[in-house]
Image (cartoon, rainbow, N blue to C red; front, side, top):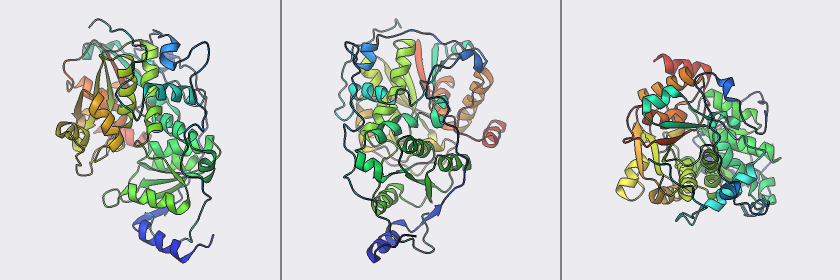
Amino acid sequence: MVAGSRESRRRARRHLTGAVREQAAGRRPGRGSAGGPYDPELFGGEVAVPRVKVHPAVLLGRGGGEAAASGPDARAGAEPRGRRRGRRVPGARFSIPQPDIGTGVMTDTAQVTLEDIREAAARIEGVAHRTPVLRSRTLDALVGAEVFLKCENFQRIGAFKFRGAYNAAARLSPQARAAGIAAYSSGNHAQAIALAARELGTSAVILMPEDTPRSKKDATAGYGAEIVTYDRYTGDRVAIGEALAAERGLALIPPYEHPDVIAGQGTAALELIDEVGALDALVAPVGGGGLMAGSATAVKGLVPGARLIGVEPEAGNDTQRSLAAGSRVAVPVPRTIADGLAANIPGELTFSINQRLVDEIATVGDDEIRAAMRLVFERLKIVVEPSGAAALAALVTGRISPVPPRVGVIVSGGNISAQRFAELLAD
């Protein structure tokens, strides 16, 4: 135990009371391959993977064989500072006809650009998986369109979040990165930061809700992170997370309200267009809005006429209400099986992007999410978590109308225990 000043102890009591410190035990998961294509035949079901390629110069901004990527330290992170540890407080609780592909049209988003996403793609190459795009003839017939599923449930840590987490962590200054990283998350961003920190040779402290599924807590701890928990229904995770990062001298990487995180998330849509060609629409789940903001920036930059459709739980339609109101609107903390989409207000940065680029928001109920989980399990033999199935649920239940001829769907994750998966499908 490292002694700290009386003032640091007071700060710890003031900012961190109400949360419960927990060092969750867990087995370190294997790293697996750093990338490479998946053989679609291994997944069973009615799968076909088209290989329509876009010229690499369009997608990655390469010219003359040179990758347009900046070094990992091009954007400075937190101010360099040494780690400061306060004394542990006894008993303290931490708690149509196919449109043409564009040639890099810049969208009206000064905070995040298509070039940022191209650079992020080069930065994460060889570290993040290039996830498969799967199809099903049954699904196409059900929807009445060609449906392309970008399966981020096969990403490292089981969700798209690793893309943004690694990109943001790699962009920290060497001093900030060495001091360690803090994050707050209901699960997937937690695992993503934990793994990114391990890959970059630093430490991570993660603030998680007390009711986070045990499988996600164990996986996060398995990557070597320290876990701190809080009550999501009474505590402010942003305030607690900022206080924790300040107390420890850590660089805080939020789950979506960060340009490097958004740029990293946009690489999934970039890969999807590379794989299948131009799309008439892209459907993606919306929690805090980072995946949607990154996807919208990538897709609108390459296919300006494409529709961008976000999907939220009915119980947590904060982005839908905010877009209708023209400003950010808070809703009660959602109670939904899609815990990864349980944001109650859009981020400022993500909303500013989505307000300009997203065409519509659809909502789905928990029963519709369960049905979509069952559909992809039975037809494509893949396991998808509730948050990951939300976008597909909106498509197959008619919440999106009319359905364009060629539709991409981001299947955002598959982090769910066998027991919970069985329970949800049995309901």
